[in-house]
Length: 289
Image (cartoon, rainbow, N blue to C red):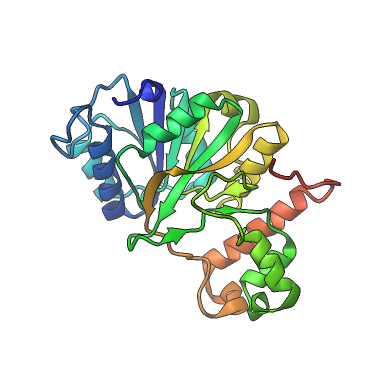
């Protein structure tokens, strides 16, 4: 390995019915984690004491199962027949891991050379960081926005209707998107998109896992908020770069009609309601410092 701090790393991937994307993700991990030169795409050549990879397969995919058994037998594979939801899948993965640092990845992520080492090194040097996120790029090289301010009810309206283009709703949306922030510089946002985040074991032991009441969406918002509440920073770190195939599956061109026709839109709105209700009695929203 290139960095001493990466010797205690757990990589958690929660997979749900995307075996071809998982295959590409594991291939990229195999390339960047191999000691020395990139001699093959396999993970089996790596010093096993340096890291572990855990795949939680939510709603078992036979293709994913066979891929891991045949090509990546060193990976810890945890299958479930039912759809666990993202938060529960992450928690099961972390509870089955032992790393000092925990890298949580979506299966539609491609990791670039040096990204993991840079993240682990930065967290090692800054123990007040609880969650660290890299710069995330689309496959055409454009930047993906992955750091945000907290949601407010007006944010949901602005994102899901034409009102987001006008007046106070546009201002609210720009604030939520941190539109004035420079993505080339380190930021301390309120929360980070959970597609690729690194968490310290020490902070996890203090904060606990993701709130499993959020079946999908808002689990990352809630988790970051709890980290800030407990004096851990949430940091966007652009020196580390990954690629992410990202679709806003909870959104389409139908605007508010999505809530009628799109299951994932309904999950998103339901999670938003749970989030606002959970924090309804707080007098002050914690602000990133």
